Amino acid sequence: MKILHLPLQVLGSEQVGQATGMREVFDEVVEFDYLNMPKDEANQKLKEIAKQKFDIGWFQLQETNWILPETLKEIKPYFKHLVQWNGDIREVVPEYQQKIGKYFDITYLGFDHIKQYQPYCNELKIMMIAVDPVEVTRHFQKQPQAIDKKNQEIKIEKLEKEYDVIFIGNHYGNQFPDSQFRLDLINLLRGKFNLKVFGFDWPFETERCPVKSQGYYYSRAKVCLSINHFNNVKYYAERLLWCLASGTPCVAKRTPNLEFLEGTHLLPFDDMDECVRLVGAVLDSPHQFDAMASRALSEVMKNHTWTNRFKQLRKDLNV
Image (cartoon, rainbow, N blue to C red; front, side, top):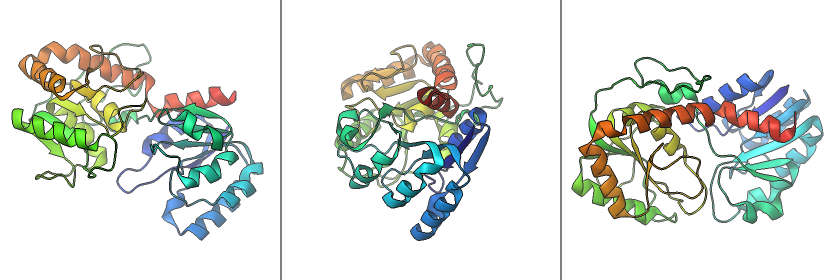
């Protein structure tokens, strides 16, 4: 099968994992990085590429306003199936998404806002974000297999720990639902533990961490934190998968209906006091949670790679 891939390429966070997963699931993958050229040029180029005819078009457009609705209308006949994946969570449907949703056979959301998007799309499904198994495990001294085909747990190399607790993420003021909660919690944890924060625009001194280097830093900590801006809907940021694949015990803000199990893969919390208690418990008895960290890594490798997601795509399209 032949698929056209329009990834959302962001400098330093290129969609390598998506492309890798596609090549494992489809016979031919054609890449078009639509954001690397002016809008008019990108739309004209897409019209030319579409004439090659494809079984599937996979578009990650989100809120770019880059590929015009009239372009989608023109190219749609060249595809057996046209789908999009939108991982850019918003509580209000962006105007751009309202205009383009009707051109896709399936719109996948990386978050559970089905009811909000339903009026503007043909068919809606949930498809959470995924990771590239090589990217998230390259920090290990010995690479585990990309996919644990025999359902055996992946053994984690014992790495030297440089940090007690680590959080990687940026601060964006108070523009998201849980922005203030995250800031207050980080400040609380900084006062109680040796917490290392990577990111920008925090009201205290931090360092920056390249996106593709997250795994290295998570693996060198005794506890890694996953705290998102949206914790009231079924949704997990890529951060949680990086944490779970790091071999480090993960303490995470509880999010409803996720596939990861309490005590089996991670330690979830609802409030700040519970987070402090869980972080302290891991620091007091770190080896007690080694098996949990190993199971978490195996779960990500088995069920949360882009290869898994594109197998789901073929199943949903019955192709």
